[in-house]
Amino acid sequence: MTERALLVGIRRPRTSTTQMEASLAELARLVDTAGAEVAGYDKQEIKKIVPATFIGSGKLEQIRGRVQQENFDMVVFDDELSPAQNRNLSEELGVKVLDRTAVILDIFAKHARTREGELQVELAQLSYRMSRLTGEGMGLSQQSGFIGNRGPGETKLEIDRRRVRDRISMLKKWLTDVRKHRELHRHRREGVPIPVVSLVGYTNAGKSTLMNALTDAGVLVEDKLFATLDPTVRRLRLKSGRDVLLADTVGFIRKLPHQLVEAFHATFEEVERSDLLLHLIDASEPDALIQAEVVDKVLSEMEIQDKPKLLVYNKVDRGELFVRDTSGGVCISALKKTGFDELLDRIEVLLSHDFKSAKLLIPHNSGEVLSEIYRIGRVKNVVHGNSGIAVTAELPQKLLGKYKKYCI
Image (cartoon, rainbow, N blue to C red; front, side, top):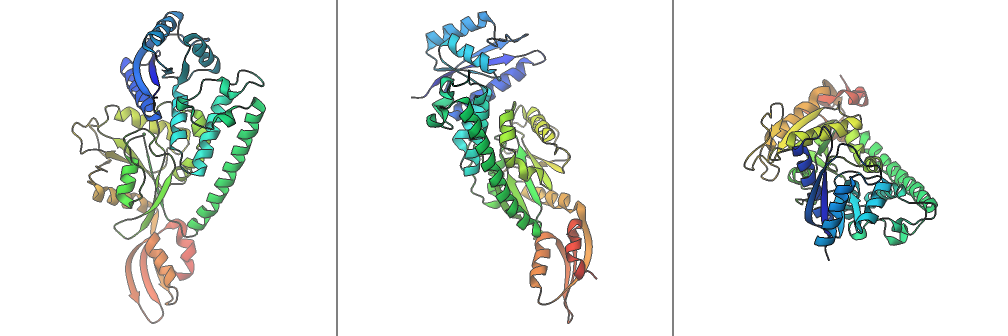
């Protein structure tokens, strides 16, 4: 049976009513994605947070009345509650109480597909729940659960604080081993470096649709928040014949829980190592510019805001567009596959900034070297002669040393 949720929107000082409404609407989509029914809304303007219950006694009594009369199974706050507030609210209201962070963690648990994704989700959930243990020896199951009680599972939740710490340490070790394994693959890949282009953007901006359209990656596409969790990397061939790696990443969102940013650090490694970021923006979304600011803020927190970036305005095939100034960016429809020629041209130009022209003489028996140059550079001219193959090409400056012995 689907759980019925009452959503509580919070308007703090310096937050407009429009911002609160937008955040509450987004919370509704999160709850729906997590598998619960949004059965009601309540709103509260807070000038000062009540330490024990977050909201004042009057609003608390009002919500309690609604819960009893309308048979809600849970109350979800569009803000992060402290462990004490969560516990006190649950006792006062008599139903499960969740905050925005718990819902997002629940969705990640639902959508994790790979072993690494599952480890990262469990680490984030246990880190979140660790602070909600009420005392030494109290089990995690004593605390209000997530929607449908997804995540580590009851057998793992029936444990005390010490065992939670041990489990967290073990998860971190396993994730470190996973990262080392991926690092080996990356070093092999960097033996013949191929530029990495990462798709970043607000959740549901259309990154997975674009990934599929450009590379036939077969990534799950749903009109839901965080439909794709695990990163995907696929090869993309540009018009010049040059190959790049296109990486799809998890979407960003308002109030992204710090537990997720820490646990999913490995997920963002491709972004950190990227040569170019494609910042996908849903041009049909009324809050498009606010969402773009959220993405920029997260990139800044990750200290990668200075990487080369191209703004890509997606979903321009829809009716009204809310982004008026698209100068400097590219307008596309990932669904209709329009605007791709300009997009690929711009990617080529932006990746060419660190290129330098070179002339090489490659022996006839070193055809694999010529193949590499075709993959990573732009070949301008090829002449087959008696002494070898004379090649004029533009190559990344960081790779010139590798082919120094062939330069003429």
